[in-house]
Image (tube, rainbow over all chains, first blue to last red; front, side, top):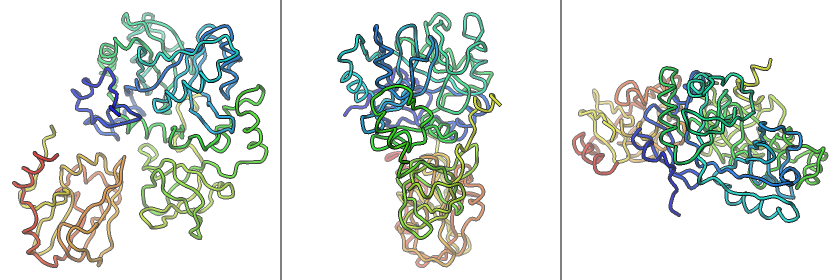
Length: 370
Length: 131
């Protein structure tokens, strides 16, 4: 299959971005600055990410709310105009179709989906529209998406807002505005554990918006960041990635995402998830830290101290900000207590590790609340 | 694209390892090309002193932000020292691949094996064509 290119492809190449395949797209995994520096920039200043591979669906119509509430785990009927929330999309058996971000806009919704699941999700939504006065439209091609992330993101965005009032935007809300004349929907959210914004605008303005943001953020330390930094930034605060922590054979309870499941309403998978919640999942997501040196990686076996296979690693790395060799993975539920000794099989050798508290980095928006 | 550095005194494998003979001891590591391709190195898994390897055996594993890659022995021999500095500072591999970022010192088994390797000039040409 031919790889898709975003409108910024030539821009990334001109910036010497190292282009790789990701979810059917050709995207920069890093720029010459390197993933560690890019990661650090987002933790301390700001980073700009091309995330146009993400998909957007519009859910519009008189019965948009009951329809969406039937589809997703979060109770969208409580969402006010302008609010945004994370949710899961599940199969009847509780398995995860995708994790999504829902923006309530007026009477309708915009749903942001993962690139790898775009077609699957659209079919899943379309399969269930019967009986509802609702229209689901895939607007991904004409909608561009960038992420501006980091403690300086607000300062950078402020320069481009007509009233320079980025500070008045609450976490997990959105606003329709224009940035230097480009009509833009801004959501105060992200996937890095830092404060930040996701921007939606016409795909025709991609290059202009990218350059405008980089220019505006120059003195604030804003730099372009690639997929490697995006992965390490989302990993430290333990934000799940579809294909790693969540997939069709995993349910939200086992994935420790029960917070995003509302049992107060009816939805696809409710019965299955309620059963799993009441009986307790057979395997659960854990965080662990290496005791013996080694880099745990996706797919490596997790072993009991006796050497028996009890699970698998979903993501692991040397966490750049935490400075530790840590990982996420699924284990049998009897091995999930903090402090439990486990081992990770790295190239045929069992390396000692210990179950520890997640996350490995407390997101800025959670620290601020205290 | 990138402006790679080459050590004129070293000889190279086509898998981007270098070896240099210093006072009869073979010092080895990975080339500037290798460290650039790997991206930021976070861990180097080195063998124990006393372990013996044949030329082109997997002798170490270098782990970067995104992947784990095998490192091959440029020549046969016995490991006499591993670079302990890499344990705390794996970034030395990126910063100084031919110097402070060395991997191992080996007692060479057969110096004639060096003839199987590329000199810096041949390696530079190989890199220009292949990488």
